[in-house]
Length: 349
Image 1: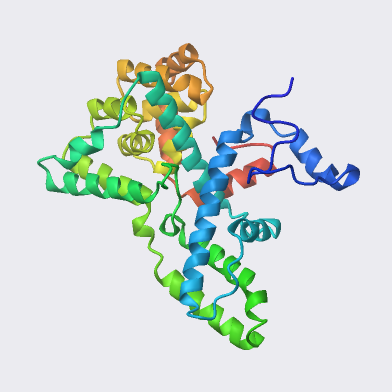
Image 2: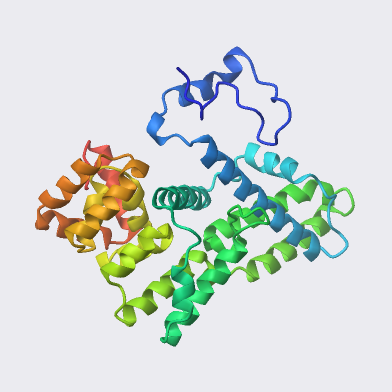
């Protein structure tokens, strides 16, 4: 039986008729990779559609900015999907940090929708209540998150990723890829030297506008910091974030309580058996609040709630502290240790 979300011949992403497919050996390499992928790790059609939509929007917005910066020397206004296909076919969009960001936003959308549906919650009110807080820092930080989120929804209320959400390295890679895609057309109107000079200046101007401090995750960090400074990171706030489907804020709050980074908190929140229990223990939550979180997230995270709360109860404190210490190490250092350990048939944690 073929899972519904993985049809044998899915329709093209743009709607329309199915694209022509290579036959026989032409598809063998991709088919072998796809056939042996772990089903639990594969993208659902919803995740794929959300990620593709966010990526298309990002590429289109950056290409529009490029055209504006080229001031009259802009290349032809090619279809956005055509530009996306060119960059994707060349492998220029296979940027690890970019894909990680798109996946996290898609996961956040799925998680938030599932929690709100299960709890019957209406429109989130937690952030609005924090905007009215007597603490000026908390109020300002909450308003900054609301405004930042508004910029990351399109007119159909679908999630977006904006340029500032990218890391500096991913931003450079994206800008250079789009500049290269424009080069052929620009060389039809100018010499190669002049075309390269114009594109180089436009790329530098665009990158000068990039500000990682405007990332949505940075705004959430500022809010969690203000709440922490005001002594407000308590179990009541954890429960309120959960009930309203504020998945990213919940991950940031748990990260703050556990003393680890947001990325690690998010990974533990969504990655199924044992990891969720470990995160809740590191965050030093009481059993009743932990049980509530496990009950709401177990099905979404693909874990058994009874087994998860049993793990929460039985985890040795020494193991919890060891995990906390490990996750506080530099991510690059941990990745290097894991890479070396895999080479010897071992892993660190």
